[in-house]
Image (tube, rainbow, N blue to C red):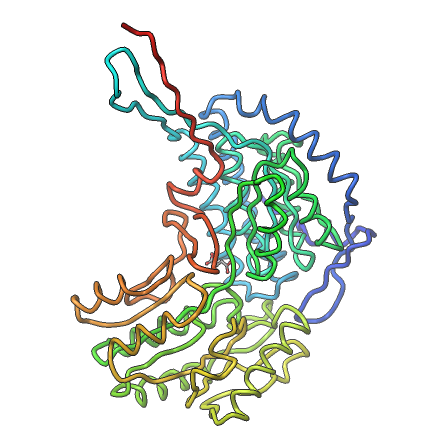
Length: 474
Ligand code: SIN
């Protein structure tokens, strides 16, 4: 069976929202931009329809989600083509993202059936205590451009599994993948009123609407800490439940006793995935003095060999950055570090592959007061700092308002536990550079956000816990 080309379909439109391919600058689609009245009406429709969806059995919802998972996997190549076209990542990574995104649908299809309540030993002989979990109600989601499939499914699948309805505003830069997912969800039997994707040209008023409309009981947002804070303030008016997956500043620590070759593999995977544009990408490398020269030389060799090319080109490993502001930010952070004494072991400038490409870069001699150390880089740049001992590594790693992901390499089991416990982060990988999985709780502490996505905890974000006291039983 040949997969349909979503890209071919979307390129026919003539709406107000233009979507560009970041590798070429070409407009690949013009789609409808929803206005606020339309979105308000869709929220009302979703809110009316949610009761019937919640009343279906969990198994029924699970079967529909399972059908959606199957359709996503059957369309893996067509969806990957779309991801690469609108967000720029290499095709192999896009194929991986589709599988990663589909895994959330499969996982929450299974979890739909396991939203157990409990009975609690009573405080009085004539009373019984129990809890049940019920859907939150109508939800809203705002998703980012860097994972246009997986960040949609990570929010929508648990919402639907829990029995909620959900209105989703995708990133303005990458709305097509979300629209394709919506088509497949409808095909799988998700009622159209229950899940609606609403691309817009101007996101700000939609965020305000999601926070002010009393029908929206929950908002899930992935994006910058700055926008997360605005949404938090706005959502105070209705005390809307919030999940926030915000910025990070991940340390990647290499101790003297680490397996250096394995640390290099982890560094490449963690730092250069999606050209460094993930919120869990290693942002700062902290390397113990005794292995700094070896680690730096090996990393520079590997980074210098990464293939920079449009995501559609065979063997591409580093695609373009998403847009001009993203590219300028990376260029500015690197120039600032170089002007202040850092050295480029490899890279250090824009790439000639196209206007939004940047050379994979390794910087040495980085100091903690350089802006690149405290700012989320979101680009293919590995700044290396050195440290003397374990306590200095922990102090440097925790010296940030963010607390999303952290990575470290050691072969000492005692140190592995000590450092894992001391790192103030929601997620810590020991001897690994990739920790994302549908089975594990993804989320941050401090200014990196609230709540967890994926895992058995992810569905709780879309459920309310009700305590019921039954009295008069004597
Ligand atoms: C993100 O960058 O927001 C998500 C990354 C991931 O799920 O691995």
